[in-house]
Length: 153
Image (tube, rainbow, N blue to C red; front, side, top):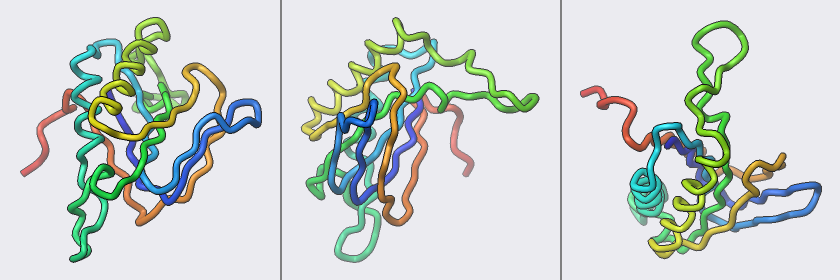
């Protein structure tokens, strides 16, 4: 699974000009599901997102999680996060799971966030969505579960 996590002042998602999810301060999380992902991956990613320390503490250090600051999480299903644009000009999406596989794993990710105590809003799986937000920082983090590779030392 891959998540693009953005710290926001607020965020909302609309489908057909109707707001279907909105949060105040917290995290806007775009989630892509790989063909190889499992329910265990969804649970691991939920734990990572719930406790990722990307909010400032009193010393202006990124030491607090969305839980610590009482924020919420807006989850957006987004298969295009898995685009492979290494060749040519048109990205390939071969690594992205098809809807019947991806949707239950997306739901498992959302359930994992709820189990961790997060307040969650979400977009509509498979819908054409409009996302509006106000980023803070900016702070953006990409998380791959399982990790894509070992981090450089």
